[in-house]
Amino acid sequence: MNLLTIDELTTLTTASNPTCISIYAPIVRLGVETPQNQIRLSNLLRQVEEKWVALGLRGQDIRDLLQPIYDLDNDDFWRHQSNGLAIFLSPNFFRYYCLPITFPELTVIADRFHLKPLLQLMSGDGTFYVLALSQKQIRLFQGTHYHLNEIELTDVPTNMAAALQYDNPEKSLQLHTGSSKGSSGDLSAIFHGQGGGNEEHKDDLLRYLREVNNGLESFLKNQQAPLILAGVDYLLPIYHEVNTYSHLLPYGISGNTETLPLEELHTQAWEIVQPYFDLTKKSTISHYQELQGGDQTANTIEKVVPAAYFERVETLFIPIGENVWGVFDPEKNSVQIHPQREVGDEDLLDLAALHTLTNGGTVYAVAQEDVPEHQAIAAVLRY
Image 1 (cartoon, one colour):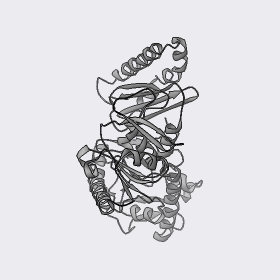
Image 2: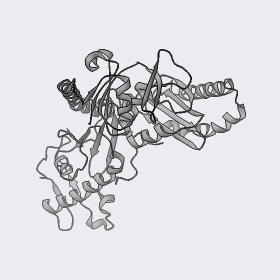
Image 3: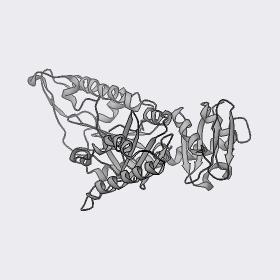
Image 4: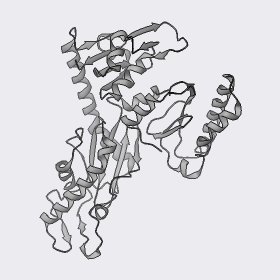
């Protein structure tokens, strides 16, 4: 499984082949209906085969192409699911993502991957992260308004002993906290070990959490989603000292995350991040209104799409559930809009959003009436 990052989105956006297959499926995680997940995926693969044959292509070719997906159908794969499954496949290319949102069932065969369902995760108020800290365990979660999903970490130390590479058991430090809510905010805990002491232990914690931060750097590279810390009180300010991720929120979740139920962790995280999302969106709209009418805003498809493609869009507003079909020619810097979808058309709103995201901008997918000036699209430009 791959993690859905801006770099991954860029890879998906730039992939091109006459047979790019996109599959989206909702996943049932608990209860008697979980066997339906396998049946649903089998039905979606059958749809892909039928569409392939309808295009006049050989059935055996599609079965060979789909083999990597068929190979996924095992107990280990189904044990590590979230709320939605997105699969992208073409000759010599295969990615799948287990994501914390529910997708409607969908299969698409085109010359590019169909990525619009992913935009709700990548929008300015779509995704956040929770980093749960303790000396015994490091966990990272990806969250939305509805769900929190744990991410498997590969380049991050799993605990303090691993980070500091203790090979002498007598040298290991043991920390005892007196409260599951992290009341020992002044590092007034009891330490046992060679040369113990608060200052020495804080140095070890700094080294430990710096290793965690360094391990997260590649994953969080180019991300703009807010990050929330969760852990006992004394760890949070120490992590702030070593943090290099610019979207770490100043407020965290205090307590012993090892015993905190996932639902409660999500509830507390959303209480922190929702006001941040609301304030950021309100501030961005106000900024657009201040610039409105000048050279730093645009509100037509013809202006916004080229600006997004050529890395000029800082913030983009697009309406949820809307499509504008047409063709953009970057060589001629021209946009053609069609009232109905024609052969070779793509959704120009989707195109503008994807290029804004992959070029480091922010996208807000909002209701039509919330797009500034009630236009089909609106953007704040970098220049």
